[in-house]
Image 1 (cartoon, rainbow, N blue to C red):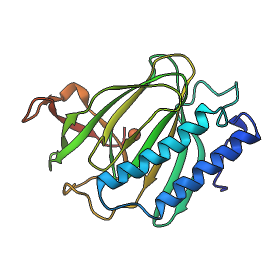
Image 2: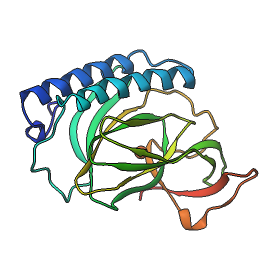
Image 3: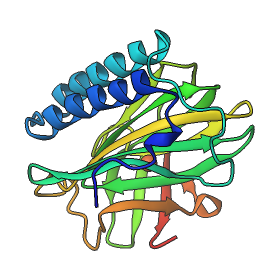
Image 4: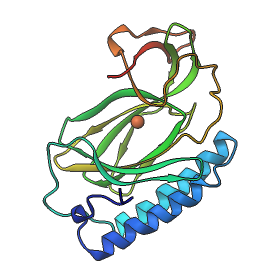
Length: 218
Ligand SMILES: [Fe+2]
């Protein structure tokens, strides 16, 4: 399968060139991921800023006829170095959300291409053998076109994204399989997205912290 997909959803040749430019930046990150989380954060902020400038200058634009009923639309997927790089669109109507979920062996960033989004994030403090996570709330963010957030193995590992107006679209970029060992002795952890059972959340050991079960395979 070709690495690029659904390129017809980009507005024009300028937008397709802008996407290729982002992919190059992401491939560079994939083969030189820094070891520490602060360094990873700095590198992902650069990815967000480069992408954001392409959005704000109008080069990275989508067509007017994006499907409204597909929560995830693939733009690019390829093995890169030891892991896999993926770029996707997350179309969100007003009030739509990607429910709260955790990640394992994955870092990512989300950049608003159009519309407005609310992002809620939690950092991972510990995992338990009972398939529960202790997490700490991070400040909620509202993002405009060109703004973005990032997810690391611990910082912001749990997140959810909500559209605040019609035809909001996020660009989701993730790198999966680049990390040898889980930082929290994650017995039974599975690669990729795992949903949080928010109804069974309870207070954690400190203010602002929660203990939440995660649900595999949702
Ligand atoms: Fe996610």
